[in-house]
Image (cartoon, rainbow, N blue to C red):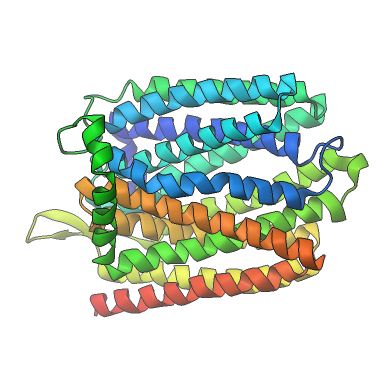
Length: 443
């Protein structure tokens, strides 16, 4: 049964270790992001206009979006196990430095640089994890693995964020508490690094080529990036599935700012900033719950059969049709629910809209990850995943900054539902395109 088989691959030690790296790494991210959000956005004694803060953080993320694809070349050349170990060690250092900055009231520019480094290294880790997965999971298990691994990572981040919010509610929202949460996040990154050392042998995660000197790799980075784009362009399904996710993330970024503004300025005042953090956390939790539900559902939409020509198990085409059909319906429903929920603007309506957004987005992401892993060879997979990660990051940044600029100019929070539903509609169109292509393949 697909539901039971969905977790059978965890019996492999290296698969468990890779999952452990993801869970503890993203738990550390959840603690860091919660501390930063409350330190910068929800602290009454600091900037009272979150739109400017959202715009600043959107611009802050742009540099990695530019250099990220070049990092993907290194993912396809260096030992990915070594990357997971050393990158998490760098994250420990940057998180501890961020904690010092928070308690020491250092200049905001220093905090911005440290956050940029931390987020950049985190993207490096996430792309490495995705590129490594086919080395520890069999081909027929990629879909349930893509459903389970990222979702458990997101769940870990959400639970860590919930722990952070609860801690702030009990001990107050202070710089000391926020710094302590960042230190705890650094501890999680340390555990992730320790787990990475347990993955044996060293080169089990790939890439399946010999490592070369740093100078040679940097010299060939541009050529490698072009090769990654060329491999992407060979598959219409890969391109379409990636753009479907990008449009959904664009809308998600815009609506995130919308929720931030509602919780910070409409639902609460400076006197109740702690409650604003709680409401924002509840909405984020709803999105995580929707994503988790999508991951569970996707494992039951798919089953496998044996391909007698190669003697291996493959996903039946009509099961792929089921996944794409569910994805299309989910994104279309998400567009409608989002429009209604954000026009109403109450916490309950936003909670429902966030859950449907998380559900639809996770189905899109599972489909895109699996399509890349099945369509792109290992020598180019890291580059493609880095390009994909760049697309998601850029889309999120564009959603945040565009919405912030619109709000600053028009002072109308209700525009968010209409603006974002257009982007979700584009995701729906691309999902329907994929559904048509898969249906032809299954015929």
